[in-house]
Length: 119
Image (tube, rainbow, N blue to C red):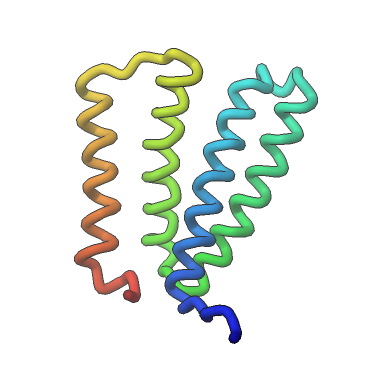
């Protein structure tokens, strides 16, 4: 029995999710690099950013560039804000939390209601 074949849309969502996670790891490493003065975090950042852009390019096989970039950057902002809060103990005020919620709402609207994203 052969494994199930995933649709191009599902593969693009997987690639986009990997790109987002790699971008968040890269941005976390950027914080740890201390302005590129620490070699290991700087190398991790460079590798993660390059890999993130590769996986973003894979997602562009299915998604329009504006939609893919909106999802990539929007969810990346939300996730790196969570990393900043939980890992680096950076505070978020009410306006920041509301703004992050609006970003999440925007990504949901694009994915659920937009014809630009093929389902």
